[in-house]
Length: 390
Image 1 (cartoon, rainbow, N blue to C red):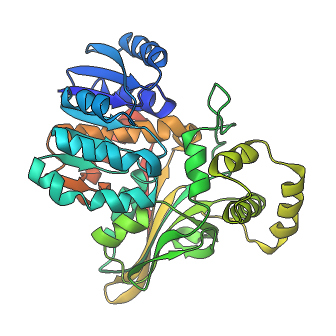
Image 2: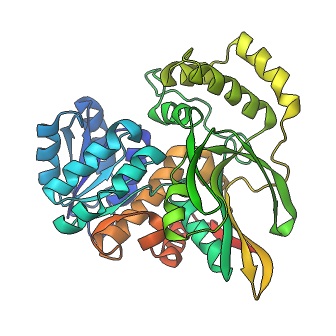
């Protein structure tokens, strides 16, 4: 198959393309980016190790004619162009029109809802589309499915990812050229306004950064904070929790306080997503002082794992909780591009070989073979394994 790596010159696109180039179903790789020179550099670097031909192309996803032409020339597309609340829906629509199988790392809940609504169109076109196949969402969804499978009935389900705890995170929110990254802009979108969560089995919208205190198996206890990610949207459909579901940030109280200051200024119109992301990379004195006043009122992560999924419900007729998290993933989680790109490529392997079925638009937990995925992840990242606790 000819694979189009859309946004393949970016950090996450390169990480995914490097693994994807070695997949048995990939016979040619096209690295496409708005910046043709960057695409050429990425293609040249990948060619050194890739067992298949790699070439570069310029594609602007906002130019419909060029986007359709690039998709029509490919059997499948790996879309890493973000933020997805701006670009994701249009790229999927175009892929359905051209009959191109689709995978992305969409981490915005708003376009996820809209893209799931394209399921009938994708089925009619024979297109298989896999949404949110990164770390969170992606690995987190598959961990949630593992935790839920240990219970007879499901009440609550939470997924969580680390901000400033556990492995040392990437040092900067800026791209090499100094511009704030799409990931940082996405983050500001998802800590402001309202975000999707599940309450009492119903999908609702609530302000983000709400504290959730958890007592989990294995003696794990602490507080994490809600953020707008797609997991509640898709887990609500696939696992159907009868209680609550949310995606959480495992974050220190001081950082949560600073994010809350940014949230207030975003909601008041004093910041845009771009200026808020730049401010977070280089905090101002005034906002730092405001955050310092709020921090003592907030609780920290305690002994929560940095990256996990947890479920509550019943087992053998009694209340029970289940926890699924990754052991040995410190190096993977410290590199956001690799932590997102490697799972995307491993999900792509199942999309290309037909494991992901039927045609339609799917979240990871609905169609990805979790046992195979985590075995592949352990081979790609030695030492990483799933730990389940009851």
